[in-house]
Image 1 (cartoon, helix red, strand yellow):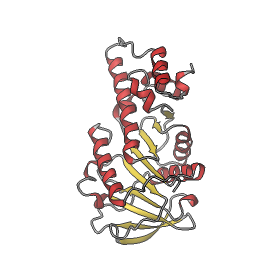
Image 2 (image 1 turned 135 degrees about the horizontal axis):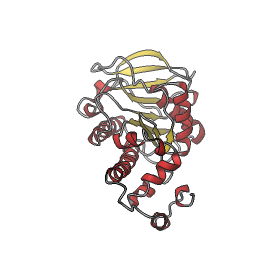
Image 3 (image 1 turned 90 degrees about the vertical axis):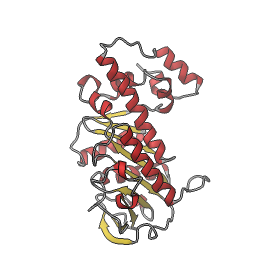
Length: 277
């Protein structure tokens, strides 16, 4: 592990996934079976107690830097709002093999999914890239579909990283503090496509949350599952203010550039959005 902080237990991580799924649904960012969560654990963890059933699977793409580690992921079609009440029916665990191309899938007798999330390739690619480049041994990744952010991405004028951040970072002082790297905006890609995966990995190198235009978001955190969800919540709240202002006819001033800069200075925030433009 790259830090001396105590490692979270498997029970604690499963609980975090359940609470995170519930919160994503509380903010209407996961209708029915939409949205998914994964967690990479780069240390030896006992999986069989929770997930005694095993099968061998091929990974959608090579992930050699995850070899020996484990990835918890939600099952395809499972509702995020139900994870907390029946987590073992909705979560599986991959033990990545030494070849980085295959894994042992561990599941519970309570399993109620055929395969792991349909976005598994995107999750694994982000974990692989961050582990390879930064040497982390823990990361949570959350895909959600927050409605106000997604709506703004349907408006061409907002569909760039520059325009989106200038719009949404101006509504609350907390936003520049919590999203100091801003939100990266990606073009529309077919979900699960190679183009989507490549753009997503690149976007999450610079940002801790990206917006998949006309689709949803993906966020990451090497602190906790909660922190990855916090990023969705801050970004979606900011987008809701922007939507409200559109509906009201653009009457609100929002924080001025000088006010945002003052917040950044007070809280020692380094951000391109304090100086550019």
